Amino acid sequence: MELDSAAVLENGGKQLLNGGAELLSNGAGGSPGGEGSSGPGSPASGGEVAGGQEGTAAGGELMKKPAGPLTKRVRKLSRSNSKDGVLGVAGTPNFVAPHRKWKNSRRSRNGYGRGLPKKGGAGGKGVWGKPGSEEVYYELDEDPNDPNLHIDAYNSSHNVELKEIVPQPTEAEVAKKLETIILEYFEHGDTREVADALDELLPPGLKPLVTKTFVSVALEHKQSQRELTSVLMSDLYGRIVTREDICAGFDLLLANLADIMLDTPDAPHLLGNFIARAVADDCIPPKYAYQSEREDLDRHGQAALVRATTLLSMHDGWGQLDNVWGVGGALRPVQTITQQMSYLLQEYLLSRDLSEAQRSIKELEVPHFHHELIYEAIIMTLEAFNESTEVAICELFRTLDSTCIVTPEQMEQGFRRVYEDMTDIVLDIPLAYSILDRFIQRCQRAGSFMSEALIKDIPTRGRKRFVSEGDGGLIKQVNFQRDF
Image 1 (tube, helix red, strand yellow):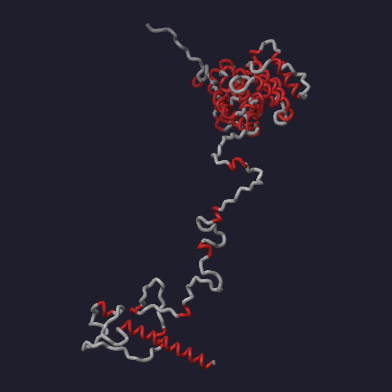
Image 2 (image 1 turned 180 degrees about the vertical axis):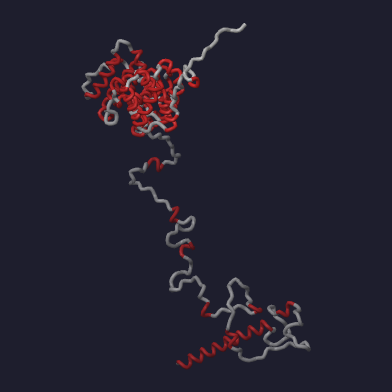
């Protein structure tokens, strides 16, 4: 059996080689019978070539291929792509060995499956599938047991009716936006812009937050911002908030006064000023301020109402409550600011309290006008002609410079104003030059708040000569007679 199978394989191989030789002879020279006709793949059918026709002899007869076994070189078949034509190189047909036909086949090699790509080419790990596949557009059926399912709407054939739902902001969100509005108002001071912003923002039930938020923010600022807040509350009354809303806002402040005092210790005093100003502006009734014996308030809330009652009970009337916060910044005339600075310096010279002087200077809120304070202080020193006054003013200047309340530019500007006016000052104070020189030397020893250029530019009074020094002290004889 082994010999027979070997013989069969050998015969099959020889037949395969003979068939390949016949194909080569037919493609190169013509028909297998040796006739002169040329096949479709023959180059002779295409016309002439250089040097004569291929496959013909000198006498015009066809040249036949010698019959015989092929050499081993014939077995080296040329490899070509499947994109090439039917014929190979030099007109030979493409040939693939039978045992290599399955190499590029997409058929399953394990004997299972239909030989098609998985899911039509859209399968694999981490892919969504081809467009239109059931994995993407598969819709679940409505579950009748779902508590959110409306059976009538689900079974109805009418269109779905949509209703607009406006979400209501929470109290914390409204308070945060109100704080932003009041801080912007401190910059521009336009009450109409604030009213327009509140029209779009404020829900009807949260209007008491306007008074609470605005006053709470103003308590942490200066007198000028508190004056602006009182003006704003008066302008919003009747348009945005009512009398009941303002009273409800003050109730919230009185109830939380203990927490507010953690940041603002004098909150009861300031809140009492706000309540008295609101009564004077006719925003709340006067009886609200006279309820200092309310049981629902603690001692801090009662103290705030007592402060408001005291301001309303003053004999000057409610007209003076318009200036309960003072007039801040550039709204005051220069003469008023100068007078307040003079009173401030006089109080300091009597008490020698530096902290109180610093607080009073800050409450003036005129950092651009501090050179007037320096000028007035130096003039007081020259007029006093007292060493204790010089020491006190020098200590005040050193403290104002170290705490950055007065800038070096304002300090230098105040000194130079005195330098420029010395010719007029000496008319009232004959010893002004010597006193100023002694005071500047004291300031130079006390600290470095005076620049070298400022010390170098100290004015000096020229010495007046009654007798010519070049004449040996003799008085010249002057003839007042006029020659005619």
